[in-house]
Image (cartoon, rainbow, N blue to C red; front, side, top):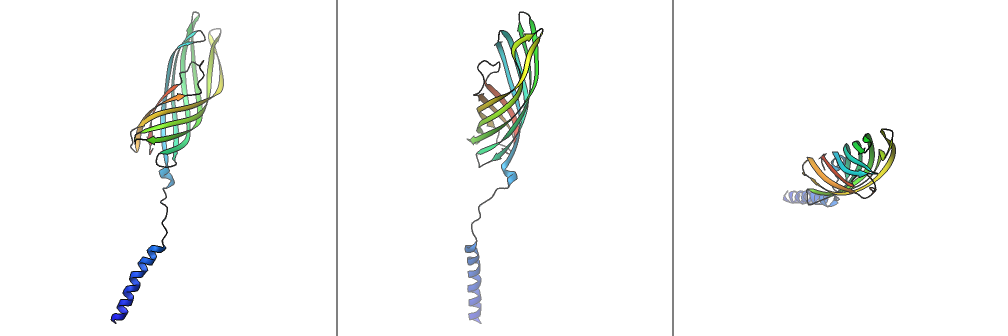
Amino acid sequence: MLLIINIIGCFSSITPLSAQSSKKKKKETIPFIDKIWLGGGINLNFNSGYYNGLQSNVFTFGLSPMAGYKLNSFLSVGPRISFDWTIAKFSDFSGVYKYNSIDYGIGLFARAKFLQNFFVHTEFSELNETYTDGSTNGNKLVTSREWRDLFLVGLGYHSNAPIAYELYVNYDFLEDDNSIRIPIVYRAGITWHF
């Protein structure tokens, strides 16, 4: 009887060991939803100066939702859309000319986190904008609509919480030197799960 108990004990102790050795190490997979983050930004841009002989004051306000996909713990990529409202006043010796436009755009971005709360932001976007070259027809500015490319690179700060605020500054490397826009773009917004 003692022999049977010892044999059963040996087999029962071998079985868990063989079961453990036959299991392959599974790569830890992160659910798809945990790799997604969402955000929404507020775009602000303002400028004052001279443009084609006209004194100009320009203000832009916009909203820009975005969604990111985490490639790893620090790098993410995704799409971004924007809707911008621009108001401006131009003046010369003949009078004051007002300008309003609603512009929209779509782009792709990449972000790399560093030092826990900071990130580098790069983005290529195409904007469909109304613009003026400053010429007038009577008391109205002559306007037209065109597509414009942006290539932004900037630095940002986020509050590192599930729902966080972020602030970042970008430089537009494709901005025309003769444009009334300054090449610096300030953005603020919120993110979820960044």
